[in-house]
Amino acid sequence: MAISDVQEKGSWIYIYDGNGTKSATLSDSIGDLMGIGSDFIVLLKGSWYYVYDEDGKKIATLSKSSGDFKNAVGNSFNLIKGSWVYTYDRKGKKINTTSAR
Picture 1 (cartoon, rainbow, N blue to C red):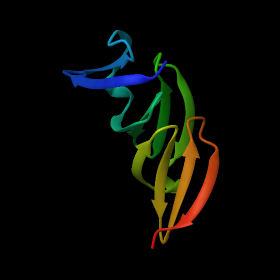
Picture 2 (cartoon, rainbow, N blue to C red):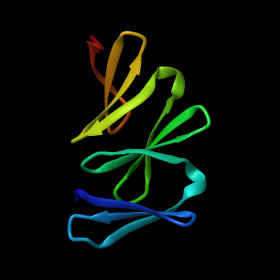
Picture 3 (cartoon, one colour):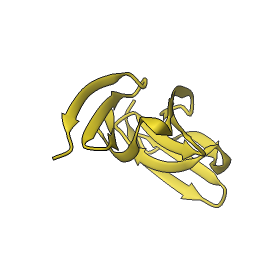
């Protein structure tokens, strides 16, 4: 199911599904919220990006050396490194590379 909202309250991250029901509760010690896709969130802790699904299950891990977080849109997220933008799917697989222009 799609994510409708993510809220950070106190030391917790709450994920809400498309029905507005809380689908997961995560400790904010797992990382800083970077972005929200349609059915995943991206967090950064230290030198690692972690991708979690709507149920709070970790589905991918990428090194921060892959690039700086740009955004998450739909079913993918973008990292920028140098003059390139790298697009990854929710499972951390690189699916596209474009010029940062």
